[in-house]
Image 1 (cartoon, rainbow, N blue to C red):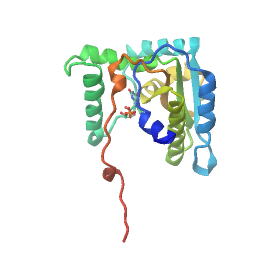
Image 2: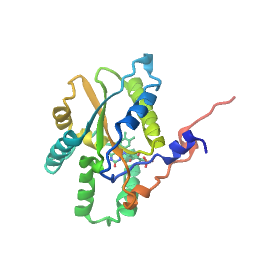
Image 3: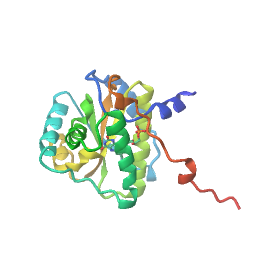
Length: 217
Ligand SMILES: Cc1cc2nc3c(=O)[nH]c(=O)nc-3n(C[C@H](O)[C@H](O)[C@H](O)COP(=O)(O)O)c2cc1C
């Protein structure tokens, strides 16, 4: 396998990190590579605000405080797509974490760990200007995947996390995120805890034919 294929297949979501610090030099290398991502009119609309150390601790505490009191305001999934989330939940919480389907307390505690960024030592919020639209969000996605692959290639593990954007006021206040930036997702970066079985999950994909159509004649 070449390194690109290894990174594509090796990247997966990590939901428990070690406290081992992330070398900033590796992150800087990955960010420099991701900057090569294509974008609509070369706007390069991606913005990321990172926090580590005490800044990460403050953010985590503030998110946990609010998450214990209020449901996050995340755009709801349309009904016809919700079975994907149920299937994923069975994998992550059931198979990966050994939580029984009717054990609401353990499930709630596991969900709450989203707001600790799963213990990742480096966390980020991915943003773009709020006046931009779907082609620009696509550009940000291309950037983020490039970044994830570059991090994977450098031995780092990640989890993209929309959940944290459910508390936009907390993110904005703690990370001083400018009002004109729309917050698209969180990002956790670190080294996976090898003793956590859910980190070994490899989530299945639909067959290619479900996503792609060719017209040849
Ligand atoms: C935009 C986006 C938002 C996501 N939000 C969350 C999240 O809030 N919490 C979480 O545990 N995983 C989150 N994920 C991870 C997905 O569940 C994961 O990518 C998907 O199930 C495929 O698994 P894999 O990343 O291990 O290949 C998110 C992924 C993306 C791309």
